[in-house]
Length: 403
Image 1 (tube, helix red, strand yellow):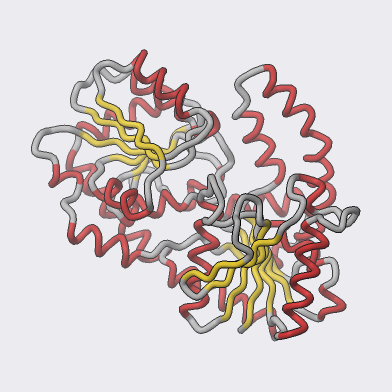
Image 2: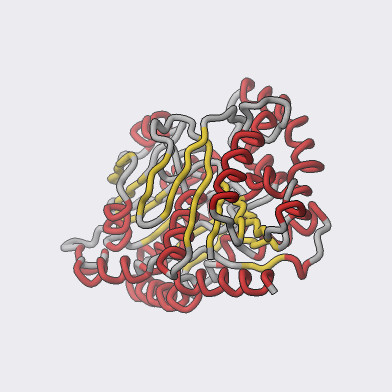
């Protein structure tokens, strides 16, 4: 099957996260199964016009990028017009069988799909109101409050406009978690039968192979040091200031905290850790390549995700599970699709400093509990969240809509 994918950014772009990583895994997985995949994305800071990596062709399109203008037909240089123009040229030379839209970025093709007689699947990673709530939670100054207010008209245009258009205009919707499915139905009134939940999958073999060659966190510790790890963007909405407050309550000198990632709040958070945490070792590593992230996960004892944002389905949770690390995560968004209380970790109320501190304390004091929850998490991930299971489900949807 020849497949075109439309997405706002990729792992070649700066500041990429789980959204772009999921797309990379999906596209490369589809290629490994014999499909041909071309990704259409705004060029932004990328110098090349196209790159092929692991069999996936990426077409970087020079265009106006940013909010409403990107999906407007008013300018010849908009994403709407430039991406459609290139797609139609490619489609004429060698027709596509299917289009995958990562969120609303396939709207240029959705709007002409009846003329093209082509099927379109869109992937929903969240909802517009969920994103806006995250923006509010990430606000930390009057300037930020002003920006939130200024953004409201765009949010409402998207909520009543492009979000509903891409949901109803697609032939089928894939939601990355049960939470996202529920939110999309509530916000767009789409029929439930039009949505399939396919949770993000991870290359389990890569992690398991690494784990077999690396001592686990428990075995690697020559002392009784408990290694706590966070992986992700360093922004207020990820709850890292909540983590700081929770750690201040723990009067232990055998904890080591590693925060992997980058983001706008990294310098401020690191400064506040230095000012407030004197009894716990902590490290801000900045961005790491994927293999080094996995190595650090495998050698950790507790994974934390104290997020305040409406997570779709964080891939870091699955990676931690495959690494055999128990999880403490906020009970928000799609996190509960991965984490079960007292099975493979704990869910705590978002922003609840006391509960987060308590769960860290419980896990740090009970090695047998950490091992049990970690093993349960690995078993659950191998059954439900592998890349092969994800690809199987996507191909089922492909076959269904092509009938």
